[in-house]
Length: 315
Image (cartoon, rainbow, N blue to C red; front, side, top):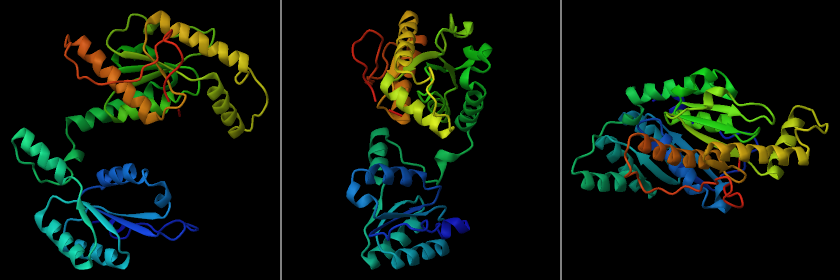
């Protein structure tokens, strides 16, 4: 366990004293615990700001566990853990029992249910999801491809992409593409600029899923003004002119409709929500290419041109 694992960084200066402490103990990176805790705490807005997380990662020896238990005793609170080794689990559970601290093995119910369903015992080896296998290197390739094909670059290689995003300015094309790349999908993004042709390489593409991203004119103007202020450029330009922005969005929608591309309105949608909708569309697209009509029954809020009022959600 590294020094940073033994002693988590102190809270920033000025941070209010925590009323609640949550200790996350892992024999790997602790990312699973952090994600679960974040998803849970958001449901408790009143206590969230008064809760401090202590992340203890790479806990794999009895000596390391004893240091963790001392820290829990000094700042008592809930303990959540992902530990594969039986000895480490026993030491933590016994220590928590002695301190009357709630101790939760967050993956146990899922592992038990999965084991029963699959008829196979889980392999108790820490950090298996982080092993350097082919999937890991595929994600690295996807990230490199995505960075190289940001903002319309290297359009002659679009046929190699899994997903191509086309959208007006400030629709979170780049962060959405990077998010998808971290899921292993090679993602290019192309900016839509009024009265300018898109790369001719887009025509005739069949392998990649092409998705149009749009936004409400009001939200676009708000985001663009904020962007200009950050660049100390507060002057009125066509970039934020209401009539010009409305026409830009209308042009983009007409273009998407002409090509038959699915459209996602990101007006009130987070990057994660946009990416989730794209992944669902991509899985359907991939199944169709493979001739598999029995794709998973998953729902996605999709805003197709001409389908009525925009649906969706924001940046």
